Image (cartoon, rainbow, N blue to C red; front, side):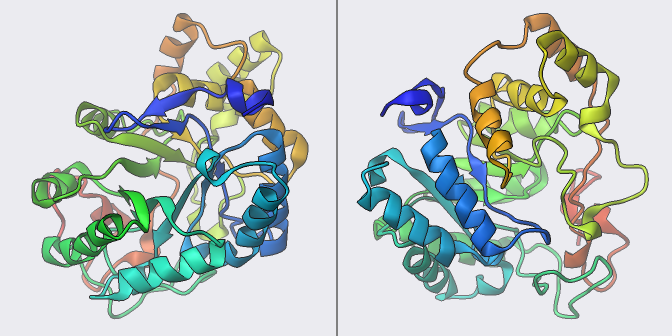
Length: 335
């Protein structure tokens, strides 16, 4: 490994193996085509990214797979140097469906195995891609430990079969983790969650770290290009917070890069997304140089506004009061 890829720090997983401390997201939201995202992945490999966060529901794994295949064929990177994640979508939680989902992702991504396979959301509440924020599926239902473990047992089989090196969970809460972790034969290596300066989820973050589970943070800059359905009045803009802007000025960089430096130094793995070469190369380079001072890190702790941006309201079930029910706000699993 040469160039900037060799300078990117790594994090230890529970078995002592490593994962890059920053990755490239591939969710093009509603704004970018599969071809544009794949082209960014091509540029990302050339820039030195080795961790790529994919998902079945993003609708672009077949295009990204062609990029991985060509990059390896051209000698730009070996399979062993890449760390590739994907996720099972909510409509594929049923018995036998997880293997089908993984098989399709592997075929699309042109891989024999993925490094980390996530359960994307902890319930089978399906909504169609690009639906609006008021969409509801009448078949949606609250979280069920039994249903989740049916899905997780299939993920464990993926590890047994060599189709996934690790498995993980996403969009979980402490009450849900308390319910399912004691039942897991293979524990999650990572949990993907929304993490940015205005939404630090300190309790959940600490809960994972204390159990040897690596937090991976999506929306690391506050995701200004997230879908319209995920935008709400009163949301804070991380990059416009005075503390972030002042620290950015002191370092002579864009405020977005302060969000990434903070994320890596705090201990989560951010997975920023951009199709613009100056942005994705800058995102990667910024974490290899000019770290934030302990005083700046302490200052950024106080930027937290508990401002969840991806509220998940499209997954609500009949009888749910609001998006808060998805996140077990009172400390118990909401039924």
